[in-house]
Image (cartoon, rainbow, N blue to C red):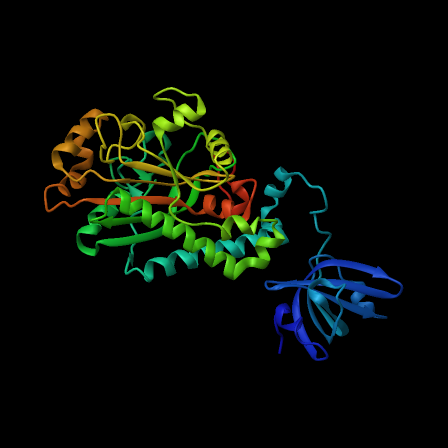
Length: 415
């Protein structure tokens, strides 16, 4: 029976079988040293006077049998003295070597996903999905999905992906579940989702994707302060979960674990107006992603909520705090900038009507959404979290493209 590498590393003195791929191969003084890789880790295997072992090339798939011996010099602190080796699939010359450009590695992403760096990131990514679901299940939330095809813009028409559809009206890929989520809170009250979202982002930065995974939550009876508290609890929970499950991967990626261990609520807060003074900007100015990262760094690399943005800068459905600002907040994290955006929603028909007129929206396009304010509306809030941005922060990744298996941008649609 074959066992995982992690189990084999603990089997000193036993004869075991493992299988995987040749991560590294070298021949020295009549011996062949093979670093075998499986999904759980790496293990060194040594074969002496083996003609079959001499045929092994990098990324060949192998089945190996041998005796485990402790050796502090070997990866994981143990190695296998090989007694039998079977080449399942002999690999051709592997095209990825040292010092390849980032662009080349993205062109051969289907092979680069085998790298230890991306393997570690994807294990952490998997833990993030698990953590989010555990967090909400423990709090009595329901996981719900909404349509990918939609006729409504949620986050502005300039980033919509139009698709061919069998109806005469224009149809788009969803930017967010939010408008449909608001309909569901009147029955389920507390809901969340993890689903793909699509935005035709013209920005070509280290944190933008055209297709990304979006965690969103919407809660009836929740005000702005309650929303910020929920976001804090979520981020702290996910960070602790990943620390517990993936400390080895975090260390391999060079992540500062103390940043995650030191998280505590409440997070810092700064209003948009206070940010302007800090950054030397004027009312109405946007803050770029680079400026967000600069601000977080300036304030000690601690999470910070930017709140109370100008009404005209945010979406029509956000509840006004006063005549100039809305009850909206962006959560900024070190090395990334904005990771979560949320707001308390408008809950009065007259306020929604006024907002739609202000933003120049056609009421006919939103008739079903307007209905929600006519039949028992309640105060409610919600937010959206970019999974890849959160993984970028957790892993210390320099580019968002490293946080998703096959990134899609306005410039990249393959492999």
